[in-house]
Image 1: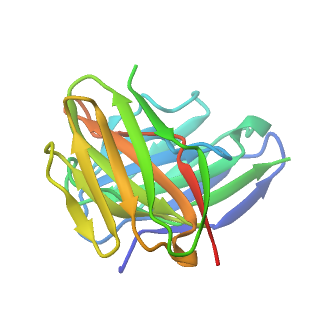
Image 2: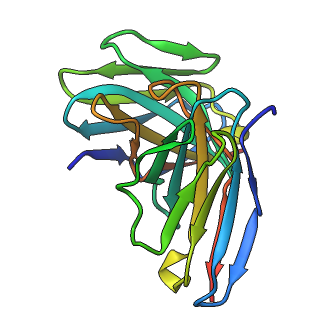
Length: 113
Length: 111
């Protein structure tokens, strides 16, 4: 595709619900990243994939957060038992290789009530 | 811990003004510094800088890196209302692929 796409663009969840956020990277991009952006802050790293391998998940805030990229293309970020502090914009980015510039999707705004 | 600090945090100017945005960093094993523009949605890539003293330019925007003093500046000349956005600075290190971002500078250009 022309750019990174994410869905849904907006998600409202009740506290305790599970959510799944999808990312479609730019075709051919090997590296895929997830970031969390709180209001008024810069994005913070969550996790990184090289093809289907999750090489760095050190930024995931708790074991309620899980990400996968089973075929090395589309990725899903899952948050179990959502809490109010999970409310943020979740950004996905992809790059040709790990050390190239990252291109971002429009993000999913998650609101947990 | 890697740290990126941007200043000012917000800036209001009039169309036609020139602005300079600052980014300083403290990281281990610096690899590159990147600038992004964020309007209401996706951060869009502006520049990636790896070498000191070499200016990168795109239209009215330019940026330069000083690896000795650990900072970068982003200049915008003849600002337009469409330049209103948050400008994000991020640093990449050699020991990983993640980007560490600053808080961003909120630029407002008034007509």
